[in-house]
Image (cartoon, rainbow, N blue to C red; front, side, top):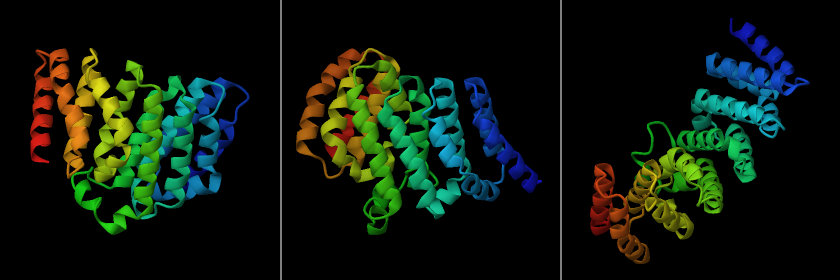
Length: 272
């Protein structure tokens, strides 16, 4: 059965390069379905043999935005299915996927923001390890983890994400996508968030003042994560955040979730 699945996947890959955008999109959707249902070990071997990542890299640059979105959806499925392979052998697969994602982030394709950043967030989560980032502050101080390929790739991905967020910081649509996907993985960087402070903290403070509820809450969660992870505290950052806390409270008055997050930030600033 697995061999037949591999054969079907090969045929589907050939049909992926269709003469029309519709055929290319349908072929990519078939690939996504097969990626989700094939055994990880079989899929890993087939992906390498067929050049699946190369095909998805081309698809992510297709003239049709629908093909670009479907290519990123397929890449996201590949990350999810091959998560154990990523953790065990981070070199070839992780680097190739990371390059595709960084290229798509740099393209600033607004039609694909959601799929691209969701893919980036999942990749960072996988590289950070199973079980989320509950021990990320401890792991970030372990020499093997900091010097490993996973840590380097996470830092590169997040740097790309923060750089593009700076360019699109005035778009609430972009802010919502960024905070829901990449922002949700901020804990994976642990103390390495300090490297992104000059851009990250002012951006989160600006978003925390937005009238859009989800953007405001996402930004406050990001600020809370930053303060909790970056210990010992940075006095200049603490002063800047404290100066803006009241203004943020006024913008989110009456919102219990917002008030709770602001109280959490205030407590974290006192204890870090």
